[in-house]
Every structure is written in structure tokens, then in C-alpha cells.
Amino acid sequence: MAPHPDLQFRPAVDADWPEIFAADARAFGIDAPRDDLVRANEKARIANDDVVVARDTALPGEPLVGQAMYYRLTMSVPGGRVAFPGLTWVSVAATHRRRGVLRELLTRLRAKWTDEHHPIAALWASEGTIYERFGFGPAMFTQDIRIESRQDLRIPAPKRPQVRYATVADFAELAPDIYDRWADVHPGVMLRDQLWWEDYLLDDRPAARPFTTQDRQYLLHPDGYATYHLDSTSPGLEAARIEEVVAVTDEAHTELWRILASLDLVSTTTGTLAVGDPLRFKLVDLRGVKVVDEYDTLWVAVLDVAGALTARTYASDVDVTLVVDDPIGTAGGSYRFRITGGAATVTEGGDGTDGEVSCDIAALGSLYFGGVDARSLAAASRVRAGSPELLAAFADVWRTSAHPATGIDF
Ligand SMILES: CC(C)(COP(=O)(O)OP(=O)(O)OC[C@H]1O[C@@H](n2cnc3c(N)ncnc32)[C@H](O)[C@@H]1OP(=O)(O)O)[C@@H](O)C(=O)NCCC(=O)NCCS
Image (cartoon, rainbow, N blue to C red; front, side):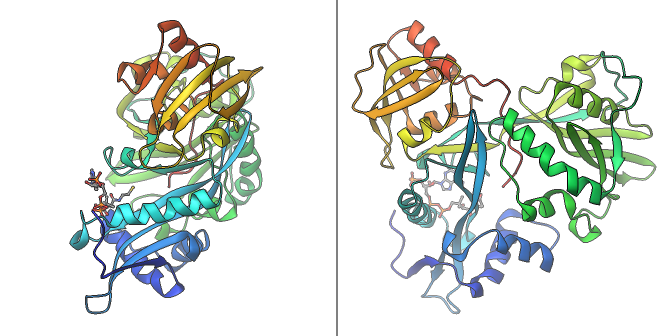
């Protein structure tokens, strides 16, 4: 549906931001009002030109009725890094929904991303049925976990503790390097600048967190870190809320979880694990960590097939014709997708000697970080290959040496 001509779509100006924040709060049910510092930080991360707002010029005050914007982010991919637009804070006023406002906002942003030659775009979706029609496919998955009593690890503890509690200043100095090294190991990790670090883990003012939580605790290992809060939601019973565990090595992962899984005087410890995290296999009782939810996190849209596929490296070689169906964008077509020594060359046309594989553009986004198996998509008729052997070979190329992890929830 084309939006009503009374609706004006344009980039944001500074004067739009109070309404943008109010619309975010209303659309996403943000409970605590975000204070001036948090708002300033948010605004500093998004340029006005990277925002599209919709105003209804027929209503008194010409209210803001829709908005979509993007962060300029960089993410690890196997063998390198990719800059991409991270679509965020998308909302349409309840009064103006299902009239084509979102579609118009995204059409305008996509045109801008194409002009800027971004190979991929990404987002975190509020619901599972909105974004596939816009070319995005779910690419990574996370679990919410709960640990209800102290859990021992199978690997004996080292003679000397490898982990220490750190001050925020210590953490601010050492964590960024650890995080960057973590991004070298895991695909999908969003790099953070100072503003992201402030927003994520350095700003621990009581105003910036739920009132039941105590000061943030910082754990440091030479190759990893973890942060958590104690939360006194029920009197006398502390819950530990783990925010982030970043481990460059297996040893750092083990030593951080040795502490987090067995905190004294804590009733419940909660946190998240990227799907593929080995924690349960390190516990004496693998049921000691309960998965209470599993959900998609990052969704990826391939905007430029050749640009995206040549930006990462691969686990094995293949030479296929890849036929991509892109009903909404310009990325569709037939490509020769040839991987030699883990590096891809992609040319339009395509007469791959090993056969033909076809998929829709959202499925290609799902495959991109190695978090979704092409065989699962083939079972859902989203990927089609001439033979089981070709499908197996095509599925194998996306495999990554470590599971994808995201790093920034946007
Ligand atoms: C989701 C939201 C942005 C949709 O805005 P909208 O202007 O009503 O969407 P449109 O009218 O442009 O719809 C575009 C298409 O998406 C579909 N769609 C819209 N919202 C949908 C939803 N919640 N679930 C499934 N499909 C949806 C429409 O049916 C339409 O499909 P079609 O064009 O293929 O027929 C709006 O409902 C909203 O602000 N929701 C609350 C905040 C939110 O969830 N934002 C998304 C953050 S990631």
C-alpha cells in the first residue's frame, strides 16, 4: 500500500529528536525514561541523514508518525571485517499502522544503502514475521540460561586464580583489546567505539540500570572478561544477572564460568549464551545450566551478492552457479560462485562446473555467518540444489571455526 500523500517523509533534523525518543518509548515500552546523557549518547551515534521520519501534515502539530534509522557499524566475518548499516529504532505510531509507512521508510533507507555500496545490512527484529519480506534472514541465535545452584566444572581449577575483580577504570583500559581479539575468533561480533562501550558496560550510574540492581561487577582474565549485577528483586535472595562473557580462549571461558556458575549466596544466575557455546559440556552436571529460551538475534540482508560473498572466507572450495531470487531489491540474478583456497570470486552470469544452487535473498542472509545450515533451509524449500552431494558441498563452505556471536544488541 502506498502511504497517504499527506505523509511527509524526510531525513531527521535536530528538532525531531524529542519526538523520536518519545515514539521509541511508546513503541517499545521502555520503562525508565532515558536520561539526558543516554539520549545524547544515542543521538551522537546516529547522524540525522541516517534517519527517515514520517510526519502527518494533515494533523495538528504535524506529529511524527514513523521513523527508521541506522547505526554505522562494523562486524567481524570469517577472515575480516565488514562495515554495514544496522537498522534500528523502527516504529510507526499505532494510529498510522498498516498503511505502508514502514515499507516507505525501508524503501528510502535501502536506496541510500545501495547508493553507499553496502554489501549487507543487519537488524535485530522485534517479531519474526516482519522482515523477511524486506530481504532479511535470521542469521544468529541466542539462548537465555538459568543456573539454579552452584555448578562445578569438570576441568580442575588451576593452582593460581587466573581471574580477578577489576575496577571500571581497569576494565575500560583492558576490555576493548580483549573484545577486539574475541571478534577475530567469532564471526558476527559488532565492534564498539567509546560511545558503545559507555552505553554497554561503562555507564553504571544507578539512573542507567534497574533500581533493584547493585553496582556492576567486572571480572578480568588475560584473555577474557565478564560483567554481572546482583539483583535484589526478592528480599534476602540475590539473583546474579550476567550481562556479558567474552572469552578469546577456551581457558578464559572455563575460568570465567568457574566463578559465574558457582557464586555464593546467590539463588539464581541468569545470562545468555550464543548457540554453540560449550558451557554445558564443561559442567559436571550438564543439566546444571537450563536453557529457558532460544531466539533469533541478528537478521542479515544481502544487498550486493558479489560484495558480500567476497568479503568473507570459506571452510571449503566449491564452484557453482548460484541463482538468487530477490523480489524486493536489486541483488537477484545468476552468479558464478567459485571458492578456491577459501577465497571467493563471484561474477554475474554463472555456468559453474559443479552445478546449480538456488535460494531466496533472505536465505542467503541466514547462511552468511555460518549460524544456519543450508540443509535446514533446503528442508524448508528455501535452498535448492541439484543433488544431495551438491547440497552437502554447498552447506559445508559456510562452516566457521567458531560459532557466531553478536556483541551489540541494537
Ligand atoms: C512493525 C511496524 C513498524 C510496522 O509498521 P507499518 O507501517 O504498520 O507497516 P506497513 O504498513 O508498511 O507494512 C509493511 C508490510 O509489513 C507487514 N507487517 C507490518 N507489521 C507487521 C507485523 N507486526 N507482523 C507481520 N507483518 C507485518 C504488513 O502486513 C505489510 O506487508 P505487505 O506489504 O507485504 O502486505 C509497526 O507495527 C510498529 O511500530 N510496531 C511496534 C514497534 C516494532 O515492532 N518495530 C519493529 C522493530 S524491529
